[in-house]
Length: 426
Image (tube, rainbow, N blue to C red):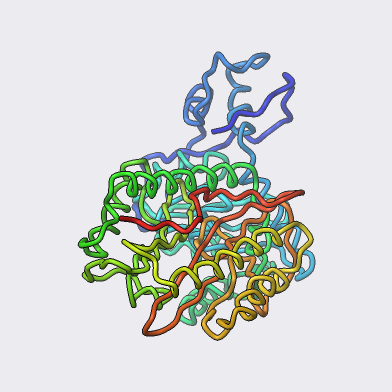
């Protein structure tokens, strides 16, 4: 946890933060007791001796204010409520629950009110975990998080729900729980819009996981594990193992390691094909760490480079470099796509560039913004964007080069730093 400096004065903050008390069945409600003094303080990872000017009881406030990013995120979404006359918003999409609270369990929900009060819910498996991860909110213990949070609402109120992530059957359960006093309002895009601009914690984590993944690929190449005669899945397994050994919790998506004719398939995955001399090998891979993901693609040539491989590599390299240069604050997303696409078009390979130029990355591997022929909006500082043009010619092969960028007030910051020069291995 990043500690923030203090002035010796902290505004009043509710002290009724929760830890589960052993009462009530897992299928119903569970009562909670407040955390006091050093218990909250140590739970938040701050040494008591490091914070001056406060009593032991005041240290509850210090611990809870030391990291306010989740409260700030809830404030950002609440700012959108007035436009739809919302009193509250129910959030059950787990990625968004994590974004708003820090809770990482597999069953959870949160209801955020326009006065910025909020309540989380999870089932009995996670009561200890949620007390650790969300010390600043009251928690309801129930299996059906969305419906049970709605039953806590005192109407009449207008409550938004995530229309894009709610199935028909789930909506029926929400309606039943809402009763006559709660009006359910379908909401789309509010949280996604807030997630576009990353906070400093998010940017730090994205930088760290990108560096980890870059180091794993460097180690793979230095060890000679990408080699003629090896199978695609063997090399992919070595790369994934190196990411895990360096600290990744998992891969961010299924690794793509496509050699020879397989490189003409943008999402080829991996196979038991043996890598041959002269093959183009495209590696699209990523690591997942502390909720955040990396995404990078590099293409290599094995043994010797054919004229065809050198030509399309050069075109993609030029296109990708131009896209990185164009991805500045204020640029239209559609224009970034056009810059990359025009270079490939002029080289005569336009029909073989079959996907968008890039996407945002964060808690999800693919998230807004999107740089494509239909891309909407402009780039702003602290957004993320991949730039990944490619050429894929069936029966011959393909090349893709991808970087992840952080948009700044100046030139974009490239956080996937592996060399993009044409590399012939062996």
